[in-house]
Length: 241
Image (cartoon, rainbow, N blue to C red; front, side, top):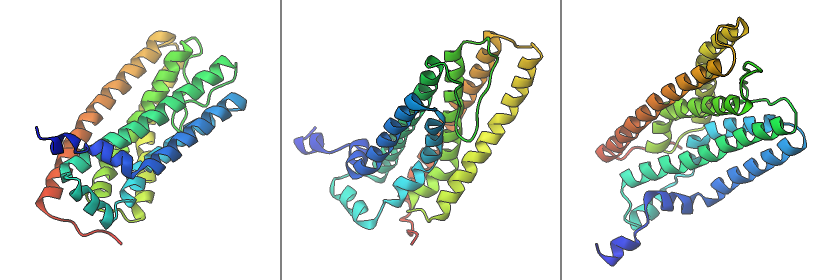
């Protein structure tokens, strides 16, 4: 490998350099949400999931022509850009999910009721179930809704610079994903009330189902990313104004 290739930035490092301010904003919001969880409530940590749902739009909106030229000058392919964007949004989503879970844990440790889950959704379980397990299920719920959103809007926000309508669509898809996920969870909560799955076993089953759904969606997102790369390689798309 030549020294030039060794110095060539990866897709992720290039995306980090180009979007330092946007990622820093998210991290500051996470820190503020944790501080508020210490002082009052963790519901603002849950609201961060709405911000995360706009991630594909926010980063895609910054993809101006000069940035494309800069990536080309660094020797980055379009595949590098897609993979880098996917990794960057994965990092941001991880930070948000950890914040949501940490906010819930803080509320539990301080003896307060946790809002739980991805705002505006909430997750309630059998009080006899371990609180940390409940927090984990809420985190899985949040992440699953975000991944589903990425599958739908990620391509449009990556292949071309998204129009403002994609911000609205991102929120709508996020809400729909949450509702669809909430239906079986609501049925499970009814079952818990009738002691069909009472205790840790019931919440563990719900968590396992969510984890399985998340695994399927992650595989779908990976396949979608490959399609986005093929679309970029096949033509140079016209950018939205």
